[in-house]
Amino acid sequence: MFLTLIAYPVAALTVPFALISTDDGFVISGGVSDGTDVKALLIKIDSEGNPVWNRTFVADCKASIWSVAKLDDGYAVGGVAGCGEDGWVAKVDEDGNMVWQKTYGYRLTQEGVPTVVPDGREIIAAITVTACDDCENRDTWIIKFDGQGNELWKKELSFKEYDSIKMMKKTGDGGYIAVGAVSESIASLNYDVWIMKFDADMNEEWVKFLDLGFQDVAWDVAESDAGYTIAGVSWSDCVPCSMRSEGYARAFALQLNKSGSLTGKKFFDELGHVSSAWSVAGGEEVMIAGLAINETEKYIWLSTLNNTFAKISVNFKLLPVFGIVRMVKLEDGYLMVTSGCDGECIWTGRIGSDGRLLWEREYSFGAGKCSPEEPENEFSSGLDEENNTKVSNYEGEIIEISETGGDGNRSDSLFTGVVLILIAVVMVYAISRF
Image (tube, rainbow, N blue to C red; front, side, top):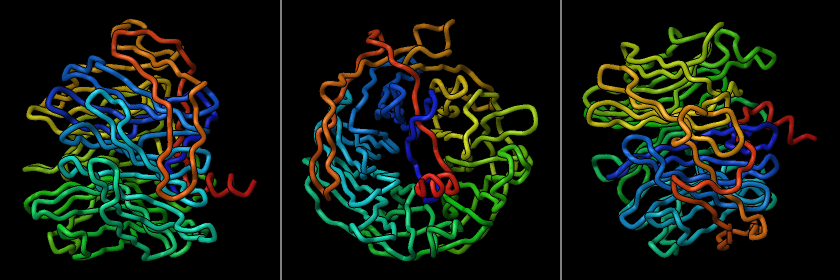
C-alpha cells in the first residue's frame, strides 16, 4: 500500500497530521504513543499558541487522527483505529470529549479516514477501505452522517485497484473538490494523482488522473477565482536511493481551471535536493507549504507559484515522506505545524505577512527533549490503560475508545514519546510480506 498513513511503534516520535483554525485559536490532530501502542491526539491552542486542552483516544494497537473539522457544535475527526486499522469517524464536543464514533472496514483498511468535511452539525467523511473480506482492491467510500452519527447516504468510488481521497473541501458553487491518488495495481508501486469535482449532491462533474513521475500523490487543494491549486509530492522509482538523494521526492503544484483542464504545473526543485508539498491556501495569491532537505539542513517552507516566501529551519524527523506540514491562512500571515525535536514533539510557528517567524512553540507529550526553556508550552496526557477496549472490524459498528486528557496547565503521568511514521509503499509492501 502506497504512502499509507499507518502508525508503527518503532521509535519515539510525534507527528501532527491536521491543523484548523477556530474563532478562538487552533486545533491540531495527530497521534501519541507509549512505545507500544499508538494513541490518537487532539490539541486545542489559543491564538498565541498556548495550550488550552488536549485529549488522547485509546484503542487496541493504534488510533490516530488524520483529519479534523469544525462543526457548529463540536468537531469532526477522522482517522484509523484498532489492530485491523479500520476507518474511524467520530464527533467530539467543544472540549474534545467523545460524542459518538464509528468504524468501517473488513481486512486491513490501511488508510482509514484521511479527510472529513463539515456541513453544519453533519459530517461528510471520505474513507479509504478494503470493501470486503476477499477484496484485494482499496476503494473510497464517501459517507454523510447526521449529528447523531446516523448514515444519511453513502457513495462508493472504485475507478482502479487503488482509489484514495486524501483531501476533500467544499467549493464556492456548493459542490466539492477532492484530491488523492489512484493505481491500476497496488503491487506495481506506480500511482497517479487523482482530482475529482462533485456537485452539491455528490454527483460527479469531472475527474482527472495525472501521471507526473512514478509515485504521485496529491495531499491538499485550494480554490481561487481562476480554479484550483493542488499540492503534493512525486517520488522517483529509485528504491535504493538515499532519502537525501537529489530527485528522490519532488514537491509539486498543479493548477486546474473550474472545468478541470490543467493550466499550470510546477516542481519546487529549487527548494532542496528533496522536497514535499502538503498544504495549500487559496485567495488572491496562492500559498503552498512543504518541507525540504539538502546536504546540510532541513527546513519547512512557504512559497507562491513564483517566489519562495519563507524558509524556517525546523528539526523535524527525517522519514521516508519527511513527516507532514500543515498551514492555515490568517488575516496577517500564516500558522504552520509539523514535527519538531527530531520527531519528539509538535512544532507550531506563526509567520507574519512579511515572511518573518513571529513566534514558535513546541509541545511535548512525555519525557522528551522539547523546549526545556519554555515549560509553559509543554503538557502531557495520562493514559488509562485499564479502559482500553477491543475495536471491532465490522462495518459501521460503534466502537468504544477510552479517552483521556487534560487542560494546558495540568501535568498527568508522563509517557514516552510518540510513534507515528508515514511509511512509503516499498516499506509497507515489504512489511506485509513478513
